[in-house]
Length: 285
Image (cartoon, rainbow, N blue to C red):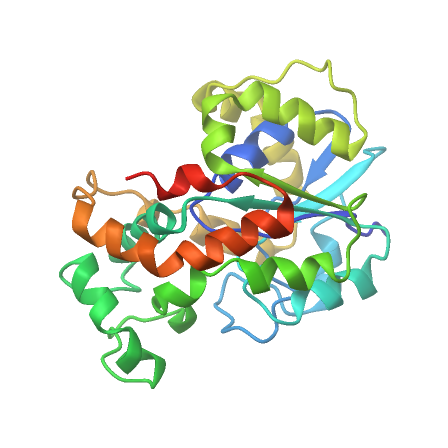
């Protein structure tokens, strides 16, 4: 039986799927066929595609051969108040990777995703933001809501306390933060830094074109599916459905973005100080 030793813990809409696709090409890396099992975020609402049973969870890694890094990527682990301690207890030598994005852009992207998947029904992002206080109390919720925590947008975009939970448990040897804006600007350099963090071969060629990358990993995907239980295959089918696809999102209104960044500015500053990373670029409109 194999246990995971690597976790991409968030944030949503911050490049975790691209990173997952890139790393899955590496022969020293095994990433679960179900990208987001969310086994350790037990304090958050569980949806049907998440994994609750420990044996089912460990079954995600039953195709491991001799890979050095065994992992998964559940984007709400960072928001969870219990996931960090649960991960550490379950896998004491595990490594954690956090992907951060300008919180305003991240939340606008999340809103557009939720419109497509029907977790959101507000006619505009501005209306969704206005509803936050009521929704926090359980009012004005969409009929097809499946993840209520995701609608409290401004809570999601506050990074400092979330990251601090992980820093209090995982030392610098076991924790790495990747900034989305740097990742998409120079993915190769960021990937090499991540591979160094994971202590795997940095010179292995990674295909950065996502369409080509998906074709490259298709054999691994098929093999993992064949070795998965019927329940996991069904969860993968639902997760990989076309519900995440949709028309091009509407433009992000400058005034709304400015207001959000003003709201997040203090938290951005504290997060920057905590991580010793310059995040001031996020405050440029």
